[in-house]
Length: 230
Image (tube, rainbow, N blue to C red):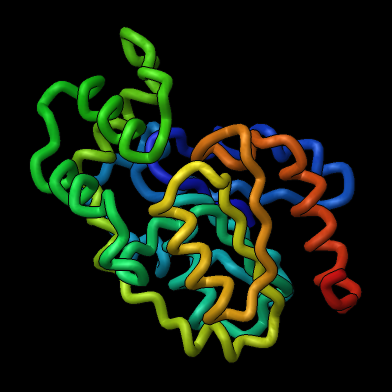
């Protein structure tokens, strides 16, 4: 089960399609990201409930960015998953003193009216140096509109104790490009007893980084067999 983050939607997982040769990939389209599914508000709590209704015993759950926060919340309510992987989840409540978080909060509180400007500033806050295309293609325009009505992910209270008790293995992945995300991933690694991978080269778009598919596949294979980390 692959859960995307903000803006890009399910296309986040395009680079992982080769994994379908041995795994069944289910791309979860979060509320608002389908053409026929308008929403007035993007909210991680509602999305976690939506995801929880889709999950089945034995699923491997993989969440990126905002979808990582959604996945953490949904996974905490279950003990029957096969594994949990989160990729740079912005669970900033875990690291409230990290430099740069105040800038992100101000951007959410007062988003520029111009969609492209807002998207550009958002991507810059995440460590991207590439400006969004002009004009925005329809997929990015929809993602930018949803970004303007997105509930701040730092409000999410991640139930770390419940997740730590859950019997399935956990993997936390970062891109090594942002102190904000590195700090969150450090906390999750420690508190959940999770494996950790750092895959640089693609910024926040970590699924596009070299080695991502191989690292994820290795983790999933070991979760299936119960083999401990190397």
